[in-house]
Length: 388
Image 1 (cartoon, rainbow, N blue to C red):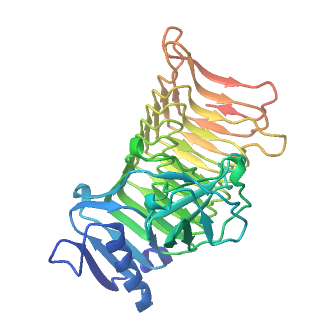
Image 2 (cartoon, rainbow, N blue to C red):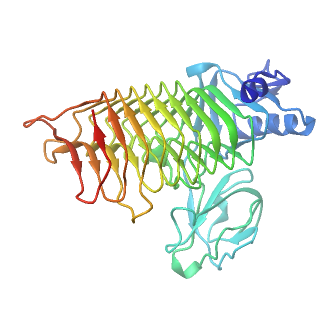
């Protein structure tokens, strides 16, 4: 109820887009100017985007109490082409600058990703926005997360989230399309970015949004509570469709379509607990429909269609004893047609350490000659899985 009350507050509305709008322009710079104007007022409010294609060079950064709302399928936030260079001096933890081989590829306001060959995935990347450029030195607005070495493949790209909300509450994103233009862009890992990325956020909602063709995870939320993703579509991303993780609790994902992503449709990362995932279509993803593992416990999965994924419909990752996925309940899901002709698939594949998952009233295909040739496979060490 608290979330509903906060999100229904109207506040001030600033429009962005065509000549009749408060701020004219179809760029990320124009949208961020509207966000910053609302932020200065201190009361939250709505940024309403016109129909049209917005050129995204950097992330739209939202703050508490804000709503970003488009006009449906006609409002498209499209990532510009990717650029990449090496940095020529080590870039150290806490720095706000990097000296690079070619700064001419970049511009102020552009999103930035920095890494080296030893630290380029998971939480090891650093992300920021460029504030100014002096010669071949890029200045940016977030301290670097690691010590990065120029002689270890130190690299800067403009891969970034298209919308992000960090350290916020009561943010809503609705009625728009995020187009990642993956073939023209460099990848970014799902712990630090996504088509839409939430970090240390609470009581936020994503409604009637399409994320497509992002070079990474479609929607990622990390260290969060009470995140809702409803009636949204994530397709064609090179990572997973949805990526809740890092201790996110009470996530609600319902009536979504997660199709044709290169990895999992729904990648449930570490310590995702007490969530509800219902009435979703999770089909045709490259690896798994749902991947679940490290301490991902006490979640519900109801009335989902999980079909035609590349390996397994539901895949429990292998974990050490004590770190498995326990106490989840799976009800009335259809799990069929997973795998391929070359690699016969599984409906539910369970590695060791997970325990005490209850499957009730599910339709799990077991076809001797089809793609999904095994309904359920359990490792010998698995205990407490029930099927009724």
